[in-house]
Image (cartoon, rainbow over all chains, first blue to last red; front, side):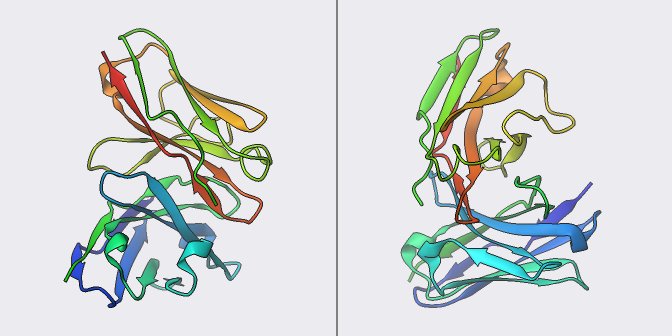
Length: 119
Length: 110
């Protein structure tokens, strides 16, 4: 059974950057696709992007342009999400979700990380 | 990429069946058999309940079933129970190699 543990909640100022980590255990990190999804307070789910480390593939939702990046460290089985130039509407709970890279679903989810952007 | 369209809320009495629709386009729902459904309780992470249109992961109740016709996918919950009261989201792979979620549906058990 795959378990995902994310880093803790943070409060950030507008214009700053945030990094959220997602550590996986109980499975083969090598075969994963790691996806990031966010949910603003009281709102729906929003797909942000994915990385498939074994294939070297990364793609993001167009709306984030160059503000968003995903990286993965296969040695520590940890994925990272970096979001730059934070705005108030980036306030949300950020989830990592993984599944086999040959599949098109989000099998396992982290517990979520609340990022609050406020001055 | 616009969100897939779901009804904001659906309700039913215990034991009844309800169906949640998820309408997309020929670039997502209509293009692939890669529609999945997620159940989310308040303050919790989503949970996969249906994948590839009509498949259930191990451990998910057989009361949940999925289908698709054209650009609309559907989730049916049979024998509605109090524990089914939650938010439900559909998701589809898209022709841009991205994913899109539905707007979400709040299910209430009367």
